[in-house]
Length: 97
Image (tube, rainbow, N blue to C red):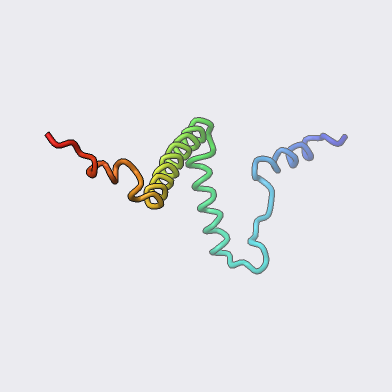
């Protein structure tokens, strides 16, 4: 039938990376294609392969991206509103004792 052992092994192998293109695409140097593949494989194996490391990566990335965004936006706001905020003019209204 369709699902004899040979076909089933070939089908399962497609999802486990055991079959596929063995050579670099035409027009690409072998070194550049394998370096990119090696970098992708390293990133995947280090950060995305297992659920706990994936979730840790997502949470840390979201946290630090949020902090960076807040700092950039606060800097832009302060730059555009220089001289109009309390922290800039409070010395003008300081109480004398």
